[in-house]
Image (cartoon, rainbow, N blue to C red):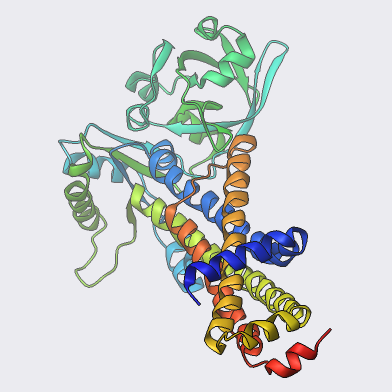
Length: 414
């Protein structure tokens, strides 16, 4: 039987039983839609981390000297215990890095994470759970903060241990309605008064989380309230991304000398850049990708079994048709081709509907939640291949059974 004739017969048969065909494909549609939608969300998150989140957390063209690596969540217990024995990053370490990198645009020391949260109060207005960050003035340059009103924190604020703060746009907007009026006003944090010297321009949101709800405080004043953090970090901003690898090597060498480490001793600090955060996120999403195939395979197998059973039932219903076709000269190969093509078309159609449903679901997620979603061509290709492959694998047995029917027995069927 010519392939074109087999395709025509398959399409006509599917069209004559639309509802049964739809329910036959439901398992494949759901599995493929799940695959496309989940992969779209994960790929969108990966792209978002690369393009936005790393710069917001670490800064652009920047790296950090840390006591704990960014990938702390994926370390073994022994590695965590070893890290716990490391010395705290100190102001002397920041000065060591600064001397080693005279070409750096900024070298800052900041209190580490998790940052404390506190209420910021002005008169009868208050903003709750605001992140309080203890920093040295260069931190503002590392993070690319732009002053909208007033002035940033200065070295004089540091040396004089002044009770001043620079605040994010959201905090100023909620407390003062007009951020410009915040300059010179006194706010209360943990019962102490601080003068607002500057308001930063908005940096927007990431995954629905605002990056403008913070207060920057001179590090000495911060430590007088919350104590010295065990996760203090040195942040370094270079002129370009190309300068980062060499600068990281120089910072590592200077830190090893300052900490008096022997050549065979491991670092008692970590030098990380945005790539480390991306790698950490990629490892997390890799765990998801180990679960997704299992769920999709279960759905595909169930869908394939349903297709096989429906096709076997269809063969039983069409036994007389098969007998007539064999009586007029149809070969086993022609009969097998007809039913196999019908199964593959069914499964491929299920894959196409599943791709469309998955794409629509991904767009809905992107439109109604903070999660980004990007449908990728490879996920669409895999989905369609799964659909067609299911049709071939689960269609062979019904097609072979139809081809083996005895024409005399088939003609006697009612």
